[in-house]
Amino acid sequence: MPKKGKKYRESIGLYEADKQYDSMEALELLQKTAKANFDETVEISIKLGVDPRHADQQVRGAIVLPHGTGKTRRVLVMTKGEKVKEAENAGADYVGLEEYVEKIQKENWLEFDVVVATPDVMNVVGRLGKVLGPKGFMPNPKSGTVTFDLAKAIAEIKAGKIEYRLDKSSIIHAPIGRVSFGTEKLAENYKTLMEAIIKARPASAKGHYIRSIVISSTMGPGIKINTAKPVD
Image (cartoon, helix red, strand yellow):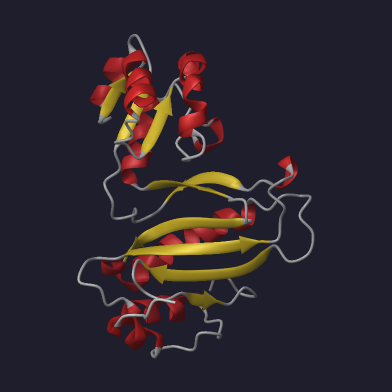
């Protein structure tokens, strides 16, 4: 097992690893445990009491974080006709269709963070399902990335819209900002995400819905949040 660095060892001495903290207290602790020489991303991992193998227990959606993620997101818009100009005017980083399908298929080009498509080209975009799907890039109506309202979709993404979805282990991983945001802004982003996930609880979910919540900075240790009171 690799030896942990000095800064990491210092960080874990600042809190109790097995204790569940209120969210505000956890975020305040995170400010102290983040010791890297760069502005670390703050990430959250939420274990849910659902089975992702069942279609009626999927938890997926998209929200705009009040303070964004601290990252400039590159948007690829796949469309045709008059919508090309609309996407360009709205600030898309890349706009096109067949040329990007070919570029992704032949060159494994993935220099983007989000893919948006208009409904009329999804039959073409569908060819990329095996490439984009596993990486979480496939446009989806539920996340607002399949739409004719390109200006709105691009504006929301640039403003800090994130998509959340269960992985195979029933865990949602999502960024909620950067350490430099400070406790208050991170708390607002955290609350917005948690409220959306709580609201998205499937009707078929039984028992405890939120099993565990852990926040961490890029290089810092995980800090547990009280699941009995996930939002202060």
